[in-house]
Length: 260
Image (cartoon, rainbow, N blue to C red):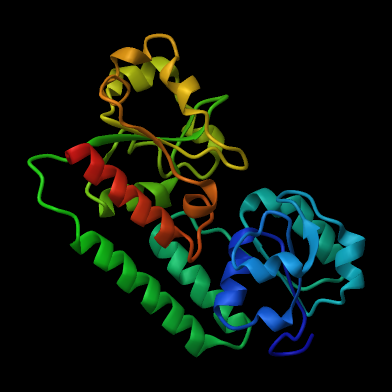
């Protein structure tokens, strides 16, 4: 293995964006099919979905290091390691862990200084977003819908962004759940929490806001009744890397619309 690695494969969108943000785009030889940032990443060989990948194609690319994210890639990573490939996988769940993961990846790529600058820039942008939140008499209760069937509430870093933007999670007790199965909620439970804002971001597909509004009994939920059902693109909020800044900006806009 060369150090710093000269040939890098990124199994996910967030690792792709991190590598490019660190100035390592010329060393990236393979990316996730879901990678959208930066646009030039789309010109790289596409070798992975999320939990699956073309292991033989990855081996053919002769990577010095493969970057991945999430325990959901455990089986894929096992297969790559058995094939003799060097792999670094992070498993961040909070905003702070996301900063740490970015710094760790930067160090592994031999770009520690660039990593520190990237993290500092992201922290600064998040602080600016938080500083721009106006004083409100109270915080809106927000239900973040990560998936529709089954209904899944937001992961921990989404909760961090909701609080940063001046909101209150509808299901704060579930946000720390490591797996999506730990964050499943019923439609009735959402009705009981009476969120004033609903934000949908269905991983890998466009959220159908009209379908959300038409769920049985949901017309009584304040968010639906008062017209505060929104979408944030999954690429902006469900990929724990630099793109979370885009999600935070959008969330702040949504909360501002609610407060009028």
